[in-house]
Structure formats: C-alpha cells, structure tokens
Image (cartoon, rainbow, N blue to C red; front, side, top):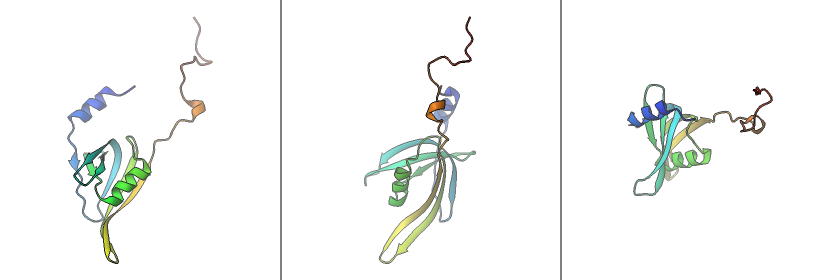
Length: 124
C-alpha cells in the first residue's frame, strides 16, 4: 500500500537542479524518474534524495542519458553518480560520468504474497 504521507511530502518538496563540477558526486535514493524534451530530443531526469535534499539530475549529456536508460534506473534504486568533467579523446570530447546502482532486493516468486490463505490462517 502506498505511503500517502511520503507522497504528500514529495508533492510539497522542491527539488534543486544538480549542477556538478568535475569530481562532484551525488549519492542517494531515486524518488522519481521523468523525461523532458529540451529541444534536442528527450532526456531523462532523475530526482535523488541524498538524505538532506532532493536533487534533480537532468541527464541531457549523451553518456549520462545512455547510462540511465541502459541501467533502467527506477524509483527506489540507490544511485551514485560522479561527474568526471569534459573528456577529450583525439578530435572529440564528451562529458563523462561514472555510475553505480543498487536495485532493491526482489522477493523470490515462490515467496511473493498471494490472495490465498496461508497454512497458518486461523479458522473460526
């Protein structure tokens, strides 16, 4: 069942855009994943609660956008993002990021709750 207080709190909470400098990190729990079209195509925005604040990470750089999509970042994940800055390789450059992601532990199918009464249900 959804926690209505947590949802209400999030509706009233403003997120701050994360504007990292090279070597800055953002670590926390993903509380929302959305997308935006900034005029150059759609990109993901993830809101991360670091325990003190909620930051919105606008992943409009190619490397960040691809990583978030490939890792299937979702609400409830614990994420770590490190901004590496502008990286030059030969005649091209890009903005680099390093990601780490922990997904919540999924309940095994044979332990998932069902609508059937358990062996321990009392009969009246």
